Length: 118
Image (cartoon, rainbow, N blue to C red; front, side):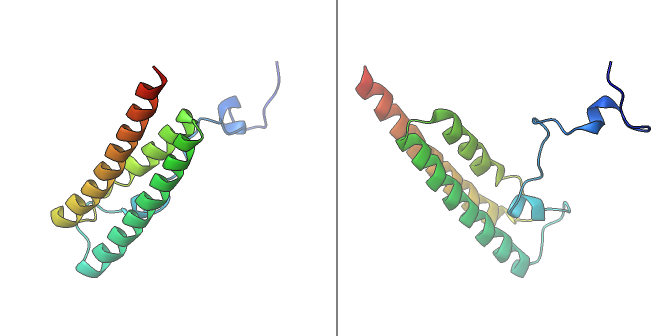
C-alpha cells in the first residue's frame, strides 16, 4: 500500500484525467443568474458566437479526417456555449440558432458520408 502526504487522500493527491476543466469563453463569464446589461450582452454574445464558429471549424475538420470522437468533443463544446444565463431571450435565441445550424450541417455531412459507404 502506498502512503499519501498527511492531510490528503489518495484521490486528492493526483488529479484524475476525467476531472472537469472549467469552460472557457462565454460560459465561464456567466457567474450570476441575472441578465447582464446590454453592453455586456453584446460582448458575451460576440464571444459565444466566435467560440461557436471556432468549434464548428474544428468539428468540420475532424469529420473530414473521419475522426468521429474528436468531432463529437467539438460538438459538445459547441453546445456548451448555450449554458449562459447572461443573455436576454432574444440574444440567447440568436446563439441557439447559430449552434443549431452548425449541428444541422454536421448531421448532413455525417449522414452523406455514411450513406455513401453503404
